[in-house]
Image: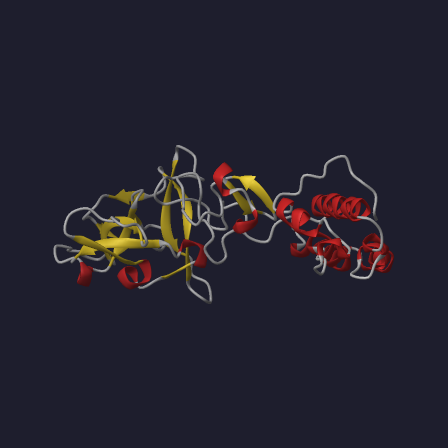
Amino acid sequence: MTGSPSTTNSSGTEGQTTSTGSSTGETGGPSTHAICDRYLACISAAAPGELPAAQMGFGQNGTCWQGSENDAQLCLDACEAGLETFHEAFPDEPKCALCQDHTECDADAGELCYQGKCTVTTCSDGIVDAEEVCDSQPGCDADCLGPSECNPLSNFGCTESDTCVIQPLYTFDEITLTRCLSHSGWFFASEGDPCQDFGTDSTVCDLGLGCAGPSLLPECEPGEGKGCCTPLCILDDPQPCSGNKKCVPYQDASGYILAPELGYLGMCVPN
């Protein structure tokens, strides 16, 4: 388990290697072997049968730390390489991640800790971009592409012949998801028009709009509908709505509970 793979560039460990390069008393302080501790934790989770042998070398009292500084550095490099190999083999095992949070990555290079590895990406920065469905919200997939079908602001996730809408999914918990609906099978209402956002023959709000209750929209005359269409917004956007409107949580405006990954969405209603 101490074999050396061809690649050893594990993001976020350079600083650890610097601080752990000295294993014995020439520096006067106790040694730390953070990268090897992480490697052992990974082995414990992914291949526990191999842990005893690995501890003999890489453990706190292992042979790696009984020799010279060069010997210790070789062990640190081997732990780094081994962790990367295990991460590739067990990408879904959290203890084999090459990074644990964004602080271990090179922020100046645009890196984030994404799926356990420092990567240049916008996914996991907490901002829902046009080509994402969610980003870091509870329940959001690690690739920022679901589990909801699409982005109701940008239409990302749907084909050109479909429109992404927020539509309640009637289950035991009445969680509301986004769906791609065909232009030929539904009527899409414009801002201010009545809407009825459930059922098989519904009038749903067009892209970028949500169906708010009439109590929040003084000019809304829903008729037989549930409410009227009003612009969607992102709750933490400093200027989410135009004109004299405020962004309120989707649940407050619609009465439906959004899926957790869509919790960033609100609707614009008059102040």
